[in-house]
Structure formats: C-alpha cells, structure tokens
Length: 216
Image (cartoon, rainbow, N blue to C red; front, side):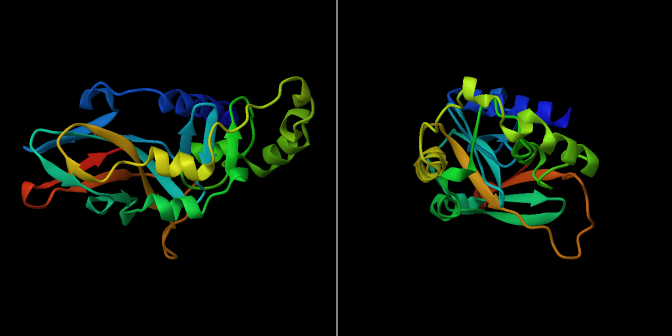
C-alpha cells in the first residue's frame, strides 16, 4: 500500500514540473509580510522532472513561490527549514547537484522502494522487513516483465534538474518560483522515528520581518 501511495506522489511530482502556480493561494501553504508573500510546497526527497524525478537522499526539497509587493532581493540564505525542531539552512544548487548522479533517476511507472524516499523524508523505506523481502522477490520489484514497457529516459541530467529548477536569487520585482534544498541529517541524540513529525519553512526578510510556514 505504501509503495502505491509513493508511486502516486511520484506522478504528482512529475505533473508539478510543468505546473505554473497562479498565485500564493495555489500553494498548499503560504504566508505574507507587508513586502512579500511566500507560497510553499513540501516535495520530500524528490526533484521533479517531466517524466519522473531524481531522488536526493540527503536533501529535503521545497518548491517555493515568492510574490513581492515591493522591490527587494531574495536568496537561499534567507530560507531555513525547521525539521522536528532542528534548524537546517538552505543549500546552494551547485552543492546539491554535485551530490547527485544520473543513477538517482526514478522514472514514472516504476514501483521500487526508492519511491518511499519521495514520500516522507526520513527512512529509505517504511515497509516491514518481511514485506520488503517479499516485494524484493516479486517479478515487478525485480524489474522482470518491464521490457514490454520501457521506462522513460531522463529528460535532463540530475545537475540540470537541480540547477535549472532552483529558486532564482537576486533582485525581486516580479514573482519567481523554484526549488529549495535542505541537507538534513537527524541529530545523533534525536529520537528514532519512522516519519518526520513537523516541518516548517522559515523566511527571513530582514527589517521587513520573518515568516514561518508550516508544511507538515
């Protein structure tokens, strides 16, 4: 059941690749300051492309839209993610791209344990051990029979997906949209959980104020 849900989210990620959010209210979560409104959407570990997604096992991904009401600047350094109380700064796209390779590609229609990574952002798989073993022995999990339905090839490299999809930095006078990446490793003394419990996006606009947007 989980793999089916994860696969459904993969299709959603792919659909979102081409989707243009009309405004802040079209995002699942949004909040405003006098000078800007930020819309946000949590994507787990998936970097969406037209035909699938790249899986960033060490990064959490958030799609952001910034809608200014006054001219200002925007940069990754203004964003942070609070994950189960742990504050994580946004990373540069170049750093994220250097950690990926094309083998991290997950095509639409492929039900693998890697899809579980897209969902929650915590463990690599949340299936019980006996269920994992059963699935790994099944023809579908092993890829047997897929020859009749070839997987789509990546429409762009991992580096292109990350750098090209990242939130633009610089002067902001019109709405901009893009991805933010957060390197998340649970603290050594953090309680072991099967899923993340709380995720908040924080945007620091300096003298204009600070936003906290709850994503999970």
